[in-house]
Image (cartoon, rainbow, N blue to C red; front, top):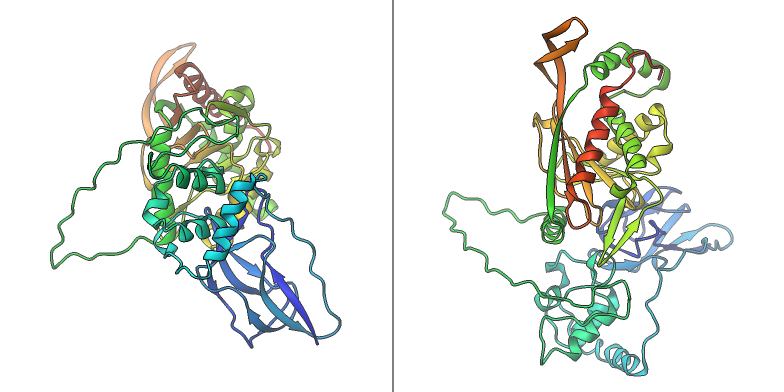
Length: 439
């Protein structure tokens, strides 16, 4: 018999850790190769971790709600035959080298953490690295106090430098974090004034239900986006009669040949990808006072989950896909999202997002930007409406298939000329759709 160390696999370039949400197997259970052994959650998506080998679980090293870094061993599996060495896993990027004084603080924390009762981080919907948790525990920083610290790390996470600077200035300037040495960060960090929540009265007939983990994350993302970006909207009505008639004509043949259903979404995504190539100023991100021009066009596709929550899987290099490839990508991500089979990497690196509010009958909407992107397009419901049709022989009234496009963009870096021109270009591509095109 041999022992195999099951490690937390790499889940995308920007994912360094995950939270264990459920063990599907227990000690003593047999496991087949590629069989799911536990469920994990990152700050974007829930996923399963399969076993790389067949055998029997002899040891589980982490419990539910523990945060595990990429590359850490999470379970021991006993296998038959010679010992198996797992493939090396890329370790998460470590933080910059600390000064001697900082290293001394960290050593003190490591000694103290064994004697100090850990704080209950389960009450927070934010992710903190084990080092940040240990430092806050050793320094007596509550979870509520830790949540008030403005993080300078990726997606606003609190880094080691953030919490050490906070501790240094705790007595004189509480709730203010000094700027880090990263020259991409703003020179000032202004703490926004906090507002006290209005008390909610509850009577005997009301039911109190706690938000689930994903709902808490979505709530935090939405509030943070509104507080970060200056949202502006542009709306345009589009005649999609040719698209509707073309799809009705080819959808049966498309499904027979490709084994995929043809919805309107890949057609719209194709137009958005083309428009982003024409207006690369919409395919950017904002990092403090700097603009990052994205090389790849990765389209986020907002998808509603069966439980009512929302997730945004990403179509990578969408501008390089033809309509068949786009349809396959849309269907694959949509189906896996509904089945809870998305991988963490499926929701990473988006550069622009599209959401279909028309699915629920909405004519148009004002979507919130998916940070750190600068724009999001809402697709309204397609409706039959009377419209003026211009011809060489004169104008007349006819029935046309129309819809609204709603474009929300970040006015910090996108002005009305760019935001309006972009959505107009999407509309132009849709209205110029060739009814006689092949798929």
